[in-house]
Image (cartoon, rainbow over all chains, first blue to last red; front, side, top):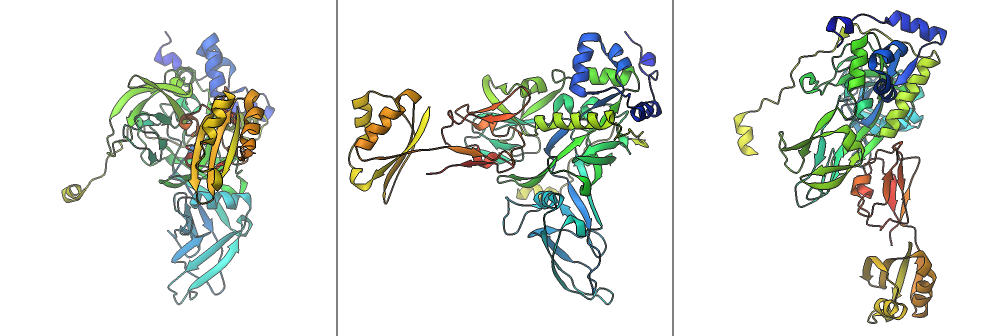
Length: 390
Length: 129
């Protein structure tokens, strides 16, 4: 047994890793490759050889969006309400700053086209229609605006996601006698299928369960470009291994292979975001955590989404290994199970990040603050009367 | 398996054409969809490869139009291989390979359309009749 003290003895520093990247000598493995190597030769020996481990995930991440700055019109306008391709966008700040929320739906094509699609179309370089209204002020007299824009007309076009990359997520199934359409996908009657989200052993936070290397300021892969972790995401729930990330990146440099608008039937629109985090193998503790967190060892709850309550019945615990096999047991019956996030693209993201580091195009950054390890995710405070009305 | 769309004109409506073909030929066929409307009836059937030609000739001799159909079309530019469709398919026509690529086996597809509205990328379309 390696003692806690020995586990934390530094093997290498961020500076040493970046120096190796500069020289083109850094040894980088994807998280899944690291685990397989650690299984055959032990995590201690693997830690000595490998400098950086890359992770990746590509799933629907509703709490995402983009900030854009339009520049000023003449005469100037202080936008009150605005729409891009008929999708309402909000104006949380000054005159011409807008936030395109991924789940905002088109007023002419609801459920099929939304903010996520607007962001995708802008990244593609396509022209979008902007309409805005205002109440008019002495300094901003204009009250109506109609124009077309592409990303090249914007001053800023940043992705700013307040909750991404859940450490792990639940598995959903449905006890009802009818099909239900949920944010966990289409669920067949009488436990006819199941769905799960998350990349399991390839997920960023799963591989750093104590948030020792991932924190504020960590440089990451976001949507095919470089981005940054800017804090813990909303609903960050470290005590239940359901940590989340708040991230930022430059949409101008992103690639639609890793950012896609999504239409989830009868739920609404969303966006698929590709996110990958490099984990520096600083000591044996970091290496051990990566080695231990395999698809076999990470389990999630199977919940009955047929029960529309905050606390849904838990049917069992299931490992990502079983989930990724495509078949699982639910109440004694074998059913097919769908991943909702793309495991194929998750691997591609980890592989792309690995290549960037090997080619000296991506350097690791040391977080300036760690993510909270002990915060609590509280339920909503409601009035007693509201409950009676339900 | 070969899928074909049979178009029955109005004058055939009261004839038991399909069962006559099955009994005469002794060939099993799988009826995937059937409907009757103002201009006649339509039926999507599935037959094994070796019997396909026999069945086509048998139906045509009875005045039925036979059209060979594709059942489903997947836009590979849109598909992100999320696998949402996989667990919904009752015919096991959708597979997820070792490297998590999602593939469709059109010969197994029964054109039920259950996967179509589940695709978040709207990459799947059913070729309707």
